[in-house]
Image 1 (cartoon, rainbow, N blue to C red):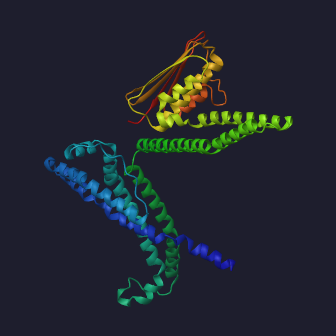
Image 2 (tube, rainbow, N blue to C red):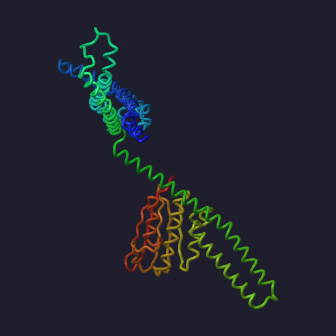
Image 3 (tube, rainbow, N blue to C red):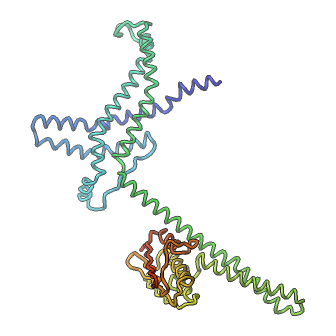
Length: 419
């Protein structure tokens, strides 16, 4: 059983997919040879010193280039199972301006180079590989030819001689070499087509950056939506239950006057802890995503933050229209954390918050008259300046903090926002 399996591995595995790859190579041969007559024509006209006709093969090459490229793409789609990546299309414009713009792009001339230079070279390799298959098939079946052909058609009377055995052995060796040559050539053609018919490295990097930016924006939007969902669940679920519990404990303390002192003390402690839990849950909900931000926007949300601080804070918000929820949430948390740090560390007597939209940029400025000396590298569990800078960078924003010793401190954040 093991011997049979090993024989199958040795004899069958090299030929798996060989027919498909050989058909792929054979289908590319006419496409690779299509420009050769035009270049032979060009060489003939140049040798005959006919400059008026010399430009015609070049123009025909430019004309057939998109047709040959489309044929190559269909070949890859049919035999490889996927489309070749396409280069970036030229910008919109009229028909003739689009054509002129296409002629000036590197992608166009890479295609011309593929069909005019790489194609003929690959055609030589295609012919060599197909010749190997043909020679292998003829040599490996020499005894069949000896038996099947009439004597008058035979070049020589080989008979069952050592020469025929050598030809058969050589044909079998070529049969086992053919799949490897075909696979190597198919990989070479695929690589050449991706480089010359597909996008350049710069275009690939640009597409990759755009895809990453889009996927990151989707992740940020999903995270923000999840925070809003958690906030609603806590506000409508756990918070309401705690409020109901606190109300019931308050009623019990007020109505059950004949309880022992120990029981009344337990109710008082439970009522106080319930109210503390409600306050902590309010802070947690506000930290996740305040409902006022979603309902009424940045102006109302930041005014609420300023009203809870022990120092006077002037808030000026000038937004003709609301930015996206993600950018709005980042702006809110940046201002909230910045004002919290002002109260904790700056020893300021007042602060000022300015939010305005300039073009497609949301500009946020938080200033205070504190002692200054704020250090961007001093992160405090993600809520220090370094944490704010990372939060701003998550939406491709810019973060700047000027805080000389003695103050004042001015924190400037610019966030890109969609129209």
